[in-house]
Amino acid sequence: MPERIALTINGRQWETSEGTTIAAAIMNTEAACRTSVTGEERGPLCGMGICFECRAIVNGVPHQRTCQMLCQDGMDVTTQ
Amino acid sequence: MKLSYDAVVIGAGIVGAACACELARAGMRMAIVEAQIIGGGATAAGMGHIVVMDDSPAQLALTQYSQSLWNELASQLPPNVEYDRCGTLWIAADDDEMQEVHRKQAVYAAAHVSTEILDAKALAEAEPNLRRPLAGALFVPSDAVIYPPCAAMYLVECAKQAGATLYLERAVAKAGKGRLVFSDGTEIFAASIIHATGASASRLMPHLPVRKRKGHLVITDRYPGFVRHQLVELGYLKSAHSTSSDSVAFNVQPRRTGQLLIGSSRQYNNEGTGVDQNILGAMLARAFDYIPSLQGLSSIRVWTGFRAATPDKLPLIGPTEDASVFLATGHEGLGITTSLATARLLTDHLLDRTPAISLAPYLPERFACEAAHA
Ligand SMILES: Cc1cc2nc3c(=O)[nH]c(=O)nc-3n(C[C@H](O)[C@H](O)[C@H](O)COP(=O)(O)OP(=O)(O)OC[C@H]3O[C@@H](n4cnc5c(N)ncnc54)[C@H](O)[C@@H]3O)c2cc1C
Ligand code: FES
Image 1 (cartoon, helix red, strand yellow):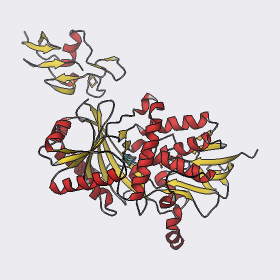
Image 2 (image 1 turned 120 degrees about the vertical axis):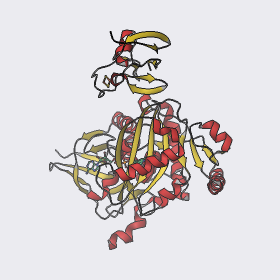
Image 3 (image 1 turned 135 degrees about the vertical axis):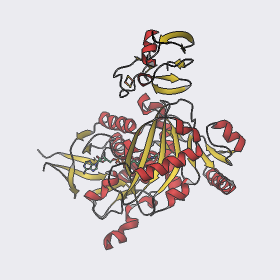
Image 4 (image 1 turned 90 degrees about the horizontal axis):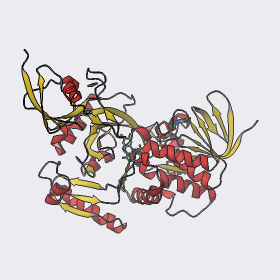
């Protein structure tokens, strides 16, 4: 059994299994990673760090490519 | 069929676009010719800071007059021009530069530009991300920021609405004596031909004293509120003044989108469009020195552009030896600011109207002797 990991996404406590990308965890909450300049919802597209569509605020740092980062215990993620 | 106009502008950068708009609105039968895309030259590479500068009395007169024309136009600009009167903070790092703040304030006051002096504490409150301590700053609230390529597009659109014809993706190979020849050999004719070809001006007119001065800019991702005013170090004056060596200066601009533009660099004798890692590194180090936390932001693009530099840092506006040929180039690092005044002064000259400020300091004839000996 993989380890369970607890993190906060948009102020709510979530559990996920080890090895989950933050982008996937955000999708599981049914939130968009970010909102575009024109107000459109955006989420992961390429999944490999190229398109920048999956950016979100991770531990207070904005514009992190969440498809390239794994969830860790105690993380604080906010969509932007 | 022989196509002929009252005036033809070569180049649809912000300067040519402004000239075409002004001349068309004055009732001239106009055309504007652009080899590539509208506003795709230096106009797309620049920062879009509409700034009053006081390197010389003539520069002060032109930038101030032009800024007043931007103020008049501001309410008509479409949203994509992103006009934002955020003001400039001229940053003084030490007491020496604080002296310069006072000198500058006196010059601006004499020209009726109102300013405010910020001490170290007021500056830290105005811009919390600046390093501390700094000595203070001169705040010029009337300075603004625009997105230049969209401004050029708007001005070309205004010119078209006033009846002007746009020749797009047509390069002029030869122009003079009332005749323009395109690179495909076709011709048009004009009583007045206005060269607004920016840094490539000397390609059509080899004797012009216009040199390319390369600049680099970096743009970041969106960090709204990180910087609130256009920030320029007063040491910038040393950089802009030097006429020979490469130089960098701290110059950061907040965009409406929340992005930050980071400049600036100045280089002669580097005419390739590629990014020069050495000067880019020096430019960023300078910016990090003033705003250490910039290092934690992500940049998304770097690009270069060419300013059209003249020996005395003033543009070339007005008639030439060929009675049909007029110049509107050589705007160096201020062409976004001074485009509207250039267009108005040139139109005043062509229509024999009395200008609001004297055209004399910008007349190309001031270099006539040098050109003859070149
Ligand atoms: C890094 C950098 C930062 C800057 N920051 C600022 C700033 O903050 N504020 C400010 O006021 N200014 C700034 N400037 C300066 C400003 O960008 C320029 O002065 C201004 O854009 C010049 O406009 P232009 O229309 O003369 O030239 P350009 O925009 O270069 O336009 C010339 C046009 O002519 C066309 N052309 C040339 N030859 C031909 C031909 N033979 N036939 C047909 N078309 C032709 C070109 O394709 C081009 O579109 C900056 C410049 C740089 C490089
Ligand atoms: S999904 Fe494309 S960069 Fe993350």
